[in-house]
Image 1 (cartoon, rainbow, N blue to C red):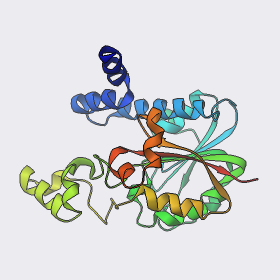
Image 2: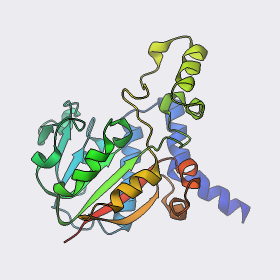
Image 3: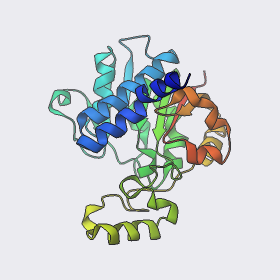
Image 4: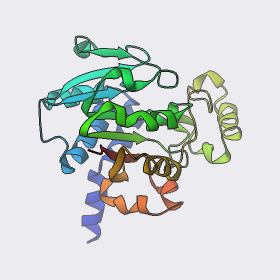
Length: 247
């Protein structure tokens, strides 16, 4: 039994991501691993079963997630504040949008929207949540995934010092490294504390959206964790929600 448990944990995506990050940092392969794992969860929730449908990679970065969907047969549009798409995605549709400033309603309607690791970088996350349904076709799905603040990775590169707070944690990290420029993420500038409970309450107020599934990303088999208030804020490394547009 102990061998089975050990084998299970070794083959989960989270240990694989951590090993890859320690060796190669967050390169393209790292994000491909994340995207493929998310697609497995979406497939289990009967989202990926219809190739040829339309998808939006919102806050796409280099477009790794969207390209993974394109390989599944989806017609993908990319959107972000700046076009940083990899060369193999440069011929695909791209829309420029600042999610803290611009309305997403101009982006069109899709069968699937994926917004991966974006919410914690928005100064106005509730604005995106309130407009999410406007991006979806009737019955369309919205995959929302982000790193909640009290997650072990909530402070990103200065984790776990973020548990000391958004001010003391980064300051101590800068003193320990001796180089403030080494830290890219800055609280209340490009990294904002978000909480699973608050996001869920906001979504449940949206009459045009329903919560279809939720799980801690990277170990979705333990979905029950997100049913536990307070505890989930610490045990979910990253929160994954699947939302559906009401008919």
